[in-house]
Length: 295
Image 1: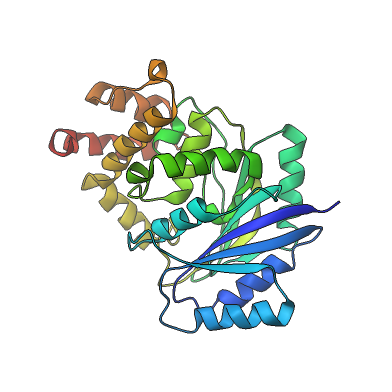
Image 2: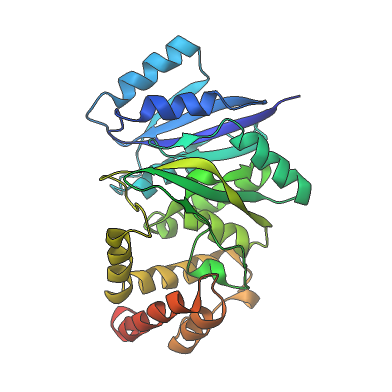
């Protein structure tokens, strides 16, 4: 019996790439695909293209309008998390509007999840467009790495539906806290790890990740990508997200496991509980100097 996969796809003015991405989704091997789209008020032909593809291929595809109103891709995905009916599916996958899934992406991801009884998986990506390289996430999980970094690009995630249900319930109950957390994929990893769910990092690319001028994150190894990251570190933005992550962690854990937010705890977490190289973490430590100003 084929696995049933629900793909949560966020769209906004994606007419240039959306058809290629949807075709790569529906052509996945050995699984039954359904798609739930949340559109953030596209002004181009994105929705028209989606509807034509739905009719042409007789797709199981539904469209939501985004009612979270945070004016961000995160709010668009949160809208999907809140409204996705996952009860009849085996797995949940995330999709941007401009990438391409390799044909065996879901089949391979599900096999790896089942092999180790993992709750979720993320994988490397092969970039194309303005940059061509393979981006691999470190799999060196530490006790609290999830408090200041995610598990890679959300478009690589495949999640067991039964575990996603717990995440959805948490989102509904804590909407005011999560809707302003910047990265939806970091939020998922944060919740899963805080709740001791097993996560698998796969070092082979199963997604072709398009790099172009309108990427929200873009190529983190490019000069522009590095400059964007450094700015977020030095202006206190990144530290705010860490503090927000700790708050969300505390909401999802019993009080006995709560983490106190203070300078020493933040220093300890950054130094000893990251997956990144120590050279990367040293830059993060500099952001702690902004701590007295953002509490």
